[in-house]
Figure 1 (tube, rainbow, N blue to C red):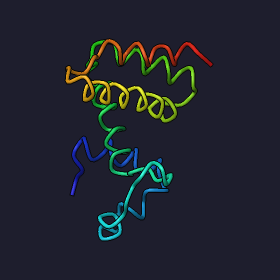
Figure 2 (cartoon, rainbow, N blue to C red):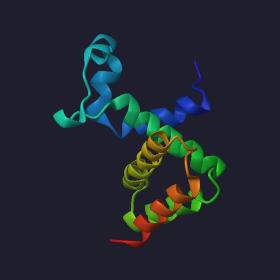
Figure 3 (cartoon, helix red, strand yellow):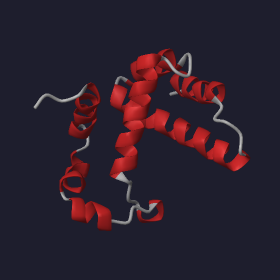
Figure 4 (spheres, rainbow, N blue to C red):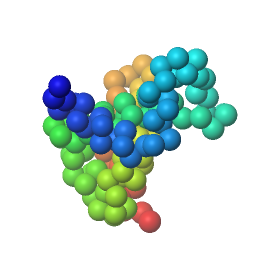
Length: 121
């Protein structure tokens, strides 16, 4: 059966994360797992969801300017994958700040955080 456009994007990101393959194929294990940062365990579902969110943001350039910021960061890092991991930190910070303040996510601040990363080594 043909994959949807979103499934195709997801398979590309999954392929870049072999450390998550067992969690993605063993549903019982994945549901029983505890993904705590303190224990050094990244939630594979959250991680891959963030890759998909960033891919979607870039594809529609929303918030406006994110496409250019991610492209600049990817060029600077020599890897879209590495750039995505840095953008995830910016995205996570934006969402955390929004939740904490009760205000909508600040897209401009998010883009500026990505741009700052693109200008530093």
